[in-house]
Image (cartoon, rainbow, N blue to C red):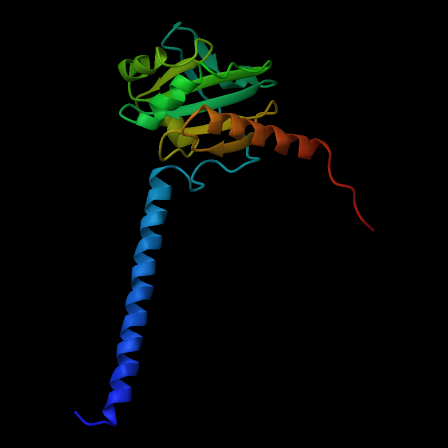
Length: 193
């Protein structure tokens, strides 16, 4: 090896090292995105402001049919849960610690049949209607790709907020976010001339 090639080899080595670090950073970013998708943190759900899809289902606890169109005028909190999801179980248990607010209806839509939905019925607060979604129709209508997920629908039937709360504190924060956004719509900012 001759001396004139030594600087070239050092620069080439530095470039290869730099490219390796860039590739490592991209792999880590890709992994972070995969985790975010799996945990429901990316906005795959219905966007805020769109009209909530209408759905009709039978409560596995009471056997009564609930139609979302009958709930217009009330705030609706829809939880999406699936069996085998530890965060779903924690969120379901947490609903007993956070009572429903006046003018609020809470519904849990469980992926699977009545047996899977019934498993959540004991964990959820007694005021939460529990629906089985064996075909995934309600999940699809709301654009839910992962659980746990929650959608808050305001009294006008529009999506006020959506997210992937893992426990009752995050669910309460999501509901608060929806309410604050609705207040902002009721009181527009003054126009500055």
